[in-house]
Structures are given as structure tokens and as C-alpha cells.
Amino acid sequence: METSVKEMLVQLATTTQKAEIETLLQQTTAQLLHHYKIRARETELYPIELESYFYRAGVFEDPYVHTNELQMNHFGELYVHRRGKDATSPYKMDNRVCMGISLSVSTGYYYSALIRSAVFADGSMVFGPNNVLMHFMRSVNASARILDTHFFDTHHAGTFQLAPLFRFVEGQQVLFEVDASADPRDKSYLMHGPRIGLGDTAPYFQQLPLRTAIGKLSTPYAFKNKTQLMDNYLAESKLTGDAAKRLMKQMRE
Image 1 (cartoon, rainbow, N blue to C red):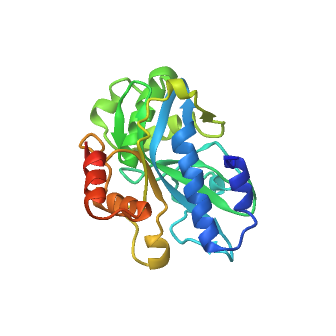
Image 2: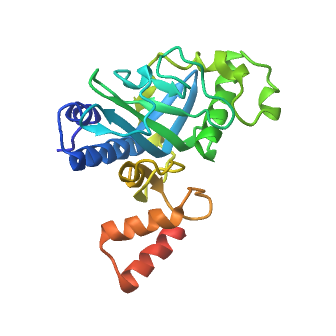
């Protein structure tokens, strides 16, 4: 019987083994990519690439986690990245502002998954975390009408003017299970790799395969570091020679 997302998140509060935590994080994001969507203000997105950011004091002290209050015990809510650790800290701006889904079900750890890429209900595939955020906010604004409709024609990354719109989508449940018949995602391959754009201050955490992507590696899928995703998938599949070449071709078609 498949372990539910909530059950895996409860286990993250008790296990003390780093390898088990890594596996649980991968399994959690795999579940989200297969079975969940995000919906706010009539806007829906279906994640196809997520990065896990988990921190538990004394057990899994990943220095790349913001440890913002909104990443702790706020399961199913959006977390728009902030410059400090308080829920009221100012938002990050320019292309550094991105959003994740908070997954912590405990006051014992921080956990959010950065949404790097997504398919939207209108069929658009958007790659890159800031691009996902801006596409999402454009759609939210169409119903909320906080900003002028032409704002997004000239602003291509986060600005302080977006802050009132961010507050429209935070502090509420936005994570929902998907009706499989209405899910637009291609789920041909589930791939893992290290997270993107981290500094090298903590090599162990930097290299952990906590990025999860679903779909293919063909041209429309503009994932970063495709070769790395491919190599990891082949290693997990334990394929070599002609079998590996056939699989590589299929993944790129």
C-alpha cells in the first residue's frame, strides 16, 4: 500500500537517519508531481519540477533552507520567499523572488518545496522558479485586480509592487489532489538531481538529489542540467550499452 504524503511528512519529524530523510523527501515530491495541483484565486498550476528544502535542528541542518516561520507547520500553503525568518519579513525581489509550497506538519522542522517548473491549466509549460511565480501572479491578478492589467507586460521579475498580490495567495490551503482524468502533465519519467544554483559552502547538502522532475527531456522541457537528470535516471535504472542508448533516445523524443 502506497504511503500517503501526510504519513511521510509525519515520519520526517521522527527519523534520525539522513539517508531515510533523503528518501522521504524524494517520495514526497514524487507524490506531489503525480497527484497534486496548486489552486488559488481560480488559478491552477500542476508542478513538474520541485526542489526540497528541509531543516531539522540537530538532525538535518541544510544551510540552504530559509528557516522562515512560514516553512514550519503550514502544510499546503504557499510560501513566497522572504529576506528574513519571520512571517512578516519583506519579500525577496527581482528575479530572486520565487514561491514554494509549505509541507511541514510539525513545529519540529521546516520544509517547503520550491516550484521550479509547472504546467498551467491553460496548457502553458513554464520553466524557472521566477517565471512560474510571475505567470501565476499574472493569472491571479486577472481575478483579484490588484494591479493594472498592463503591469505584467513590462515587469518580468518581482517588484515591490507585487507584495499586495502575494498576500492574496498566502495563508490559505492551495494544495489539492488532482482528478487523474484532468491532469495535463506528462508522467513518462520521474527524475532526480541536485538542486540548482546553490553555493558551495556545504558540499554534502549541495549535492543531494533533492530536485525532482517529471515528464521528458525533449526540447519543450526546458529543465536546467538535463544531462545530469539523464545520467541519474540511467544510474537508477541500472541500464548500460544499447539498452541505455534506447532509453536516452526515448526520453529525448
